[in-house]
Length: 386
Image 1 (cartoon, rainbow, N blue to C red):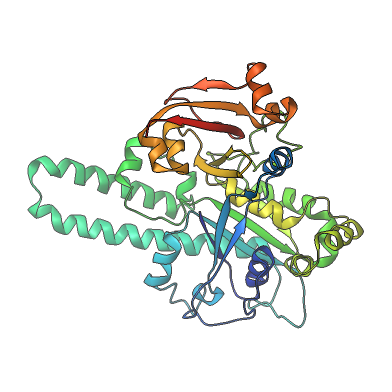
Image 2 (image 1 turned 45 degrees about the vertical axis):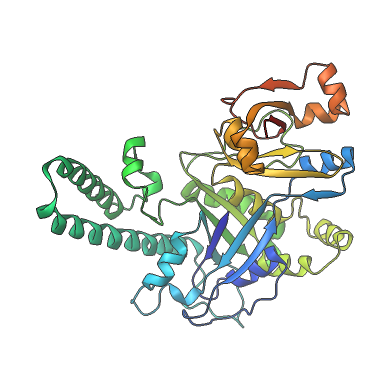
């Protein structure tokens, strides 16, 4: 999964990128022509860690997210707007992380002259909306030009697409991002080739001052009213204490995380033991970067299921609602082609049982067919024909 990190200049965007990836990319203002920074991050999941502690495998493999840090100068650059090449790169991302500045630092002046994260969040939404409106306008013009040569039987589809695009543009002009507009399943098929930016899941990362780290939750609640449209769905029983990825809210596809990029970058340089002591001194209950990673992972509607054994315990991701046969293809294409059935047990039941054999004995290990919808936290063993 690719997550694009965006933000205006001097928001601390690359500092956040360096912290989350444990990288050392150059910070500070740099030109829009500079190539993005790219880093791969493992998704924290205590469920997998506990399964690995039970099975003691030779290898433990977490799901991963690829973060792409785009130059801040690409937005707000003298009114010219982002380049087509930049927008194409951004459009290929599965989700966006927008870093807004909420910290004060006289040595790093804000380009707008004042610190106002709500203003910056709204300004970025406008930039993304303008990009989508420009894409819609170009597509409608092309359809109109091609309409003369379209056969009668194909004209209806072109007209439906045009009507849909114009309706979406009207919504954008009314400051309703595409992710907040009603788009039906059949309409989604018409839009399959597009890469609209305001239709992508968006995580707002409020880059707070060092002295505010202990009240990060309060800051998130303050921004929740304007950015996180509705509260997340409740976790399944047991997930809250296990560090499961945050639930996906298909209605809003937005979230908020408040972190101090500077503090998190310093923590990333420490050992786990030293970082834990540092966080305790600062009153940080949950590592901000873990929350950011889990939220950006969950916003796209991904779930994690697991395979376990002496050789490897591994997390695999799949879209929520994926049937077992298709999920098996995530492990290997041969498993999907030759799928017979899957043996499935919930991760917490397996931990309580202590082994797959005991889970089978207690009837917790179930036999599921091709159409079974894989659930977040399932442990799955696939039986297949070669």
